[in-house]
Image (cartoon, rainbow, N blue to C red):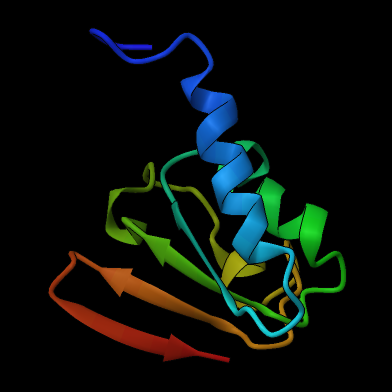
Length: 101
């Protein structure tokens, strides 16, 4: 919590979020930066929790251009790391979106 936020603010936010993302007609837009460990992405953790087969999840990978030199992004781009049926979008430098299937 920051400032005068309630001590359980994280729980309140998660509870509010779960009211929406658990609905079967809800598409999930899971946004994660490529220069962070995707295994620790809160967005992807929640998506896996409520959509384990990736049927309703669209992945958005940002900051691909900021990955460490020599890092291989092939598994991310080829949909191997986290298979999503609806694919993913690579956002490069936040100036253009590149659809990726």
